[in-house]
Image 1 (tube, rainbow, N blue to C red):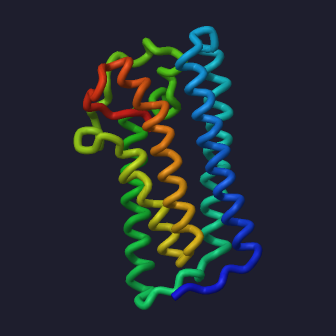
Image 2 (image 1 turned 30 degrees about the horizontal axis):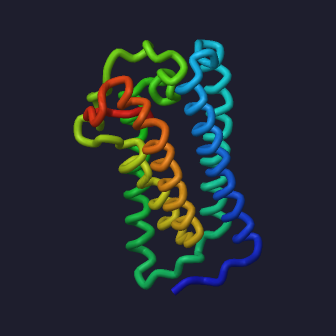
Length: 194
């Protein structure tokens, strides 16, 4: 059973979805451009990209958290205490895996530096969670979004979590994976940036 969503809840959902589109859209465009146009590469281009990417990434994360807080209690589950506890556990697991993966990649990998300086990384990452998962950052590392939505009982948060993960996986399949296939060989088992 769900609780009716007030107009400000719909506005918060719309804002969170638009924020995700802005984040993924900017990164998609910048990485695709860097990948196909060598003249737009180099350390200076990477520094500018990283600064902008961090800004839209953090904004996107804050808009998701705000959505979950503003729409808490809109998901009325028959066993709320158990779902909230499960949400807390999912959040902890997702954050731990994302931090572990980010540490294995390093700051350069986390921010896609090899799109701007292709020789910066000499091989695939097989450390940390990349030993067991092809892409822990975009798969298991997204558990915290679902967990936060469940812990706060936010139906729009669950919708946004699914949308966020689908959008980042589309970026991965359309831009990142082809780039890494060219660098390391098609179908190479690898840990890919974020």
